[in-house]
Image (cartoon, rainbow, N blue to C red; front, side):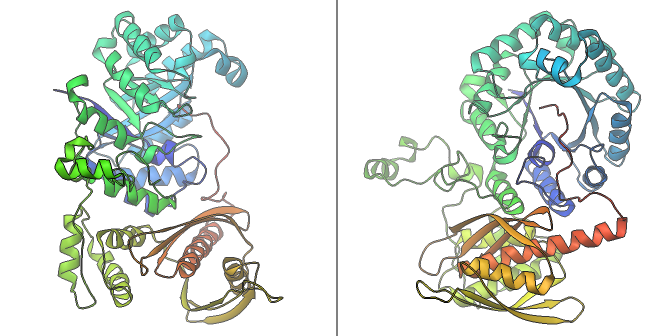
Length: 527
């Protein structure tokens, strides 16, 4: 079968969406997971957007081997030059340049004529070709662009040297039938398009991103742009795990394969969730907790007779294991590392100590440690942001009724050797913890969102807390894990405090540079 290229933009389109920002270290974690998935292209960022984006793209280009590393840029000379510079360390590089082509974007945003947009597109691709041979051009909002004009633009950029042409559904407006017709028409109409790769990039505003991407493939697209868990602007993008498994499961229909190691999908998905502090919904296709769960008696009976009655995919094909890890406080490092390997995690030497410490702490409190517990420990450890503060002691008192407010007393240790203890009162236990942290650190902390869930089974199950908070005007995310859900909230808040502290240190070192964790001013993007 022919192969569809998988272009992952989790680190660019996904990361720029509200609530999904990542530190450089976290981007590298996700990039390595994508490389292990064997995606064909990793779009690492938008180097011209900020110094932080430039450094992130450069770091991924330097340290991640295997996939082609791409950088996004407008058809503007400075943008293209910055992308080329950031990509320099990569063995396989791609410049991805774009300009909007639809009437509403030309008139309302760019205030450019058809001819001006076409000239800018050609100039951008021509300049990019002076740096690299692998050039992708995107006609932003291509789905809402006049067909004849879109064909003219694509023909011109192909003649200028583009090797991939992307027609994005930037606002998630299209339907599968329209995608099939447009891509089929372009394939038959645009001279030279048979010599380049046609690409699709669909957003999920109407919940059709995966269906539209598959329709584009039927129409001639040979590259799908997508993200882990479907993260991205607004409602998100085509979900990598869904479109890959659709192509695999319905190979009889599509007749294509991908290079993806699907056994790593589940772990990559949950690593991204831990890194960004956004849980994978239980009912999420392919990687959600309920994807291979059956509660209905009729369904259970069918699955017991034959899994194929109600399961169209094998759990192990996406990295979901049916077995349970049952280890205790006497279990050693070798057993944990071996089980982690079976689950698809290749632990690095420097992180094993931290994982074992968390494992031993959990094993002392729980009778059984499940696969889901170990996964949470590993992904939580990999997502953890080191910082100057650590939690030494916590005591929380909640009150259902009465005149006194809930209180939280905690002791923090600083890496310089100092310790501080503070008691705070609040409307609830989390608010009381916030007040104590504010008193010790001098930070202004406003909690924006809090989500909690149980990781495994039983009354001693681990609780996972995901939190977003504003600290001194900048948004940060935090992740906590504990058999005590209030302690998990405290850990999430402490991670936020540590991120804010490290960020303040970086800003002080660089002078007056804009906050790296804050969103840069909204920019026009290819999709």
